[in-house]
Every structure is written in structure tokens, then in C-alpha cells.
Length: 253
Image 1 (cartoon, rainbow, N blue to C red):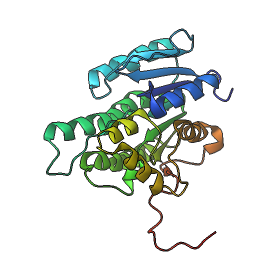
Image 2 (tube, rainbow, N blue to C red):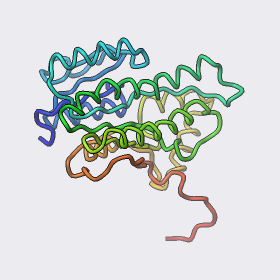
Image 3 (cartoon, rainbow, N blue to C red):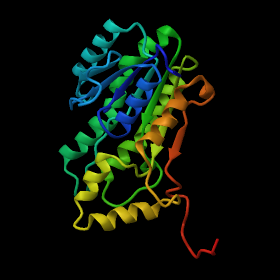
Image 4 (cartoon, one colour):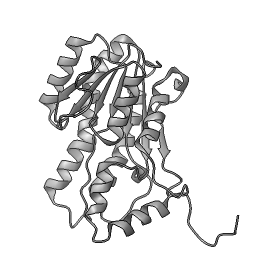
């Protein structure tokens, strides 16, 4: 029960990495509040699991959500900014509306949630914010102009929060590689050869597999613990080695 009586707010917590975080923190004793626009199908009867319908790209909805949270709990120990979307296209192929949507959800949403959580964290003189960025903040692929730019900007937001709200609040960016989530599978399904694309995803990782949401959730949980109290402002990759190899010949092992 690592997080007994702690309160965690998770954006985009109804599926993928967010759902894995919600499950882990709940199982470890936390009060879990999920912010999402999709109503979850699990945990609805559990006493310490709460769903708040909220479009995190809308400032007024975020303010109302956190007002409701603060009326029920006198503290927020952890904020996990996980919600994210993907739109494909190069700069010339990406519409203004798609660009704005990706930035609104992936970056502005994290800013708004942090903006509303931070006053309480500062007043209680303790808190941790985890921004779920991406390995694409470091390396990228073709036709993801909006996504890779927004996720790169998330690292700047992480540093800014870590600097401005130290020593009471820590902020860390977690940067996953390809993870077995609905968003990844939906993206792969857009290809005429999904199986081929999935194998390409596997081959990009030195681990010869893609990651699982539970693996990312375990890293996030560790970063929230006091065991990680000397880690702040950093971007930590959990990517199976994606992007560190330039290829070339291999010797038999």
C-alpha cells in the first residue's frame, strides 16, 4: 500500500497508460481521480476511484474539475498529465485545426491541470507532477509534426515547473517508446499493412518488443515515491532502447 491515503489526479485515465496508472495507484491504496471525456467502464463501484468528465483543453472545465476535487479532498499528492492524442501529417499537410487540437490536448491540457493543482501542492509544501511526454521529444519519424513538437515542448514545461516550484514540488517527464495502447493500435490500423507496421515498431526497439502500459505505470509510481525525491526537472525515457542505435553490422552473440 505504497500510496495509502494519497490522492492522485490522472488525465486521460480511462485507457492505455492512464488506466494502468489508475489501477496501480488504486491497488496501492490511493484515492484516484480520473479526468477524461470518455466515461470508464471499470471501477465505477469502487469507493476510492472517482471519474470527473473534463475536457482538459478547456480552462473553465479544468477549473471546475479541480474545484470539485478540492471540495472532496484536502490535498493533491500527485498529478499525472497523461492525456494525449495523435494526428499525422508533415507541416504542409497538417491543418491549423489539427495542429491546435494536438497542442490543446497534449500541451495546454498539462499546463492547465498543473496550473490548478500547483497552488494546493505549494500550500501543503509537497507534491509531484508527472508529465507523460514521448520518446519523440528526442527522436522522431515522418509526418508527426504536431505531435513531436508538442511532446518536445512538454520537456520545457517540466523544467519550468521544477524550477519555479522547488523545493516543494517535483516535476518529471516520462518519455515512452511504442507502448501497447489503444492509441498505438488505432494508428497502426490506419496502414494498409498493419501487421507489417507493427513488426516495424517491434524492430525499432532493442528489446525486440513494444512496451506495456503497466511498465510505464511502474516507473511513474516510483517517481512519485519519496525514494525518488532527488529526481526533478528530468526527462526519463522508457523506450526499449529506441533511438540509441544507428544500426550497422551485428556480430553473433
